[in-house]
Length: 319
Image (cartoon, rainbow, N blue to C red):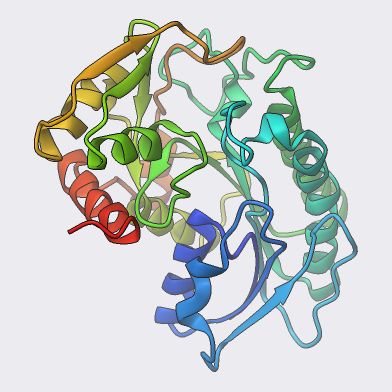
């Protein structure tokens, strides 16, 4: 296939580029580098089946030639208000990527009668009252809260995707992506994985906010990419959760990173500054992905973290 991939220079987008090209597809990658990095796709320069276009998806998208699949991954994704790359500091860009960007990407898919896949998010569920979260759960979301620019952008993106499916008979898919980690995450985007790994590699105390008992479920990026591609090639139109159902507290996660990086770092508990509406628990129910796609994560947390630690150390110039 010839695939249009928005957010191609992002963390997940760049790994998708690699996988699609490895399987013989052609990729037209779009990114405006607001949060994506040219370094993530530098190794693809000159690849005969990769075309990169620097473009803001909130503006009209024109792609010459055939397009057989559109994958919309363009959006800021870090919730950290203390990072310049966190979506609380990019509220308008985030809303435009989810609303105008999704509309424009759907327009390309409709013009070419291409299949369409939306990268949605577990943030659809907000601070959930159901645990673990199933796709049938409608969520517990504050529409005017400090995270609303991302939550509501993605909720709108899902709604317009389903509208195009129902009204225009477009062949659409929706992936609800839970916490994902791996090489090429921004070192400075303020999320828990790069924060803790960066501190551990520098021998600094690992900072955990609050009591550290809040939980997350971390999926290695290779597993996520496998699930995304299986969904793209499936006939499923309703949302599908993609994530690792193995739940871990942030305190235990920090202790594991400290141990795997040599145990030089202690853990420091700071006043809870995560902000309102930050979910206390996050765990996907992946029953539908298992049944429909035959998909289960394969990379255990220790193996994935070891690879990620090595990648971060290389980028930081450490042995």
